[in-house]
Image (cartoon, rainbow, N blue to C red; front, top):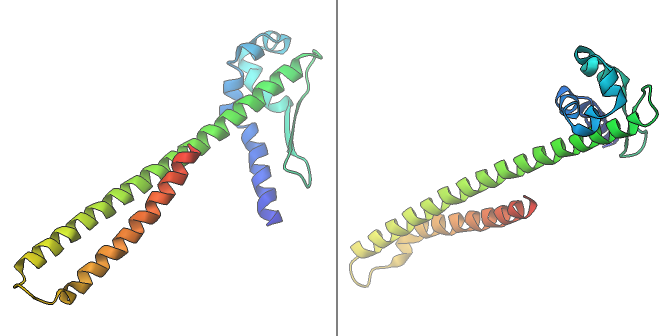
Length: 168
């Protein structure tokens, strides 16, 4: 478990320095207003940010140290804040997208099961309408069992769908 946790934290530290996050950071008004941004040549900004930004897990914790070196004392705090905000936005968006996908899959599966239940109900209705009066309905047991099993699956999917809707 510790190894899995360590790999996860390392991957998040790498994500903080990913090109998507860094490119987003370079477009923010807060970073564009820094002396660092104004004094760094345009074609060097991304590489300079990538080289001077540090992102490393703090051993035996869930924390990641994000830091930066630059000429002006006030610039690193502004830039690091924007890096962290862009990283959090990315993580939240990714998580929401995953929940939306799971929710959509759940709804599709629920719809399929409801269709199957409706078909089984139609088959039962047809079967019972063709029986002579006073016939033994226990002969329809297999269809009833399938219908019962599908109903249980639908109930489970409805619970899962409600949970996923609560997360999004």
